[in-house]
Length: 81
Image 1 (tube, rainbow, N blue to C red):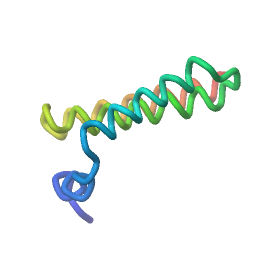
Image 2: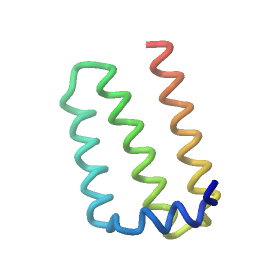
Image 3: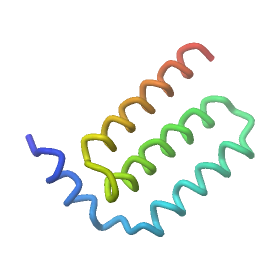
C-alpha cells in the first residue's frame, strides 16, 4: 500500500489554479442547488480539494486529517438530513 507522500506525488498534476477552480465551482453548486444531497456532495468535494491544496503548505498528515474530518462531517450531515 502506498504511503501518503506517494499518493501526493501521483496527484501532483493538479495545479493550484485547477484546485481553486474546483473549490469555486463547488461553492457555486452549494449556493445555487436546492437539493440537499447535491449540496452535501459539493461540500465533501470542497473538503477534499482544500485538503489537497493545503497539503502543499502544511504537513501532509495535517491535510489528510482535515480531509478525514470533513468527510465525517459530510457523513453526519447526510445521515441526519
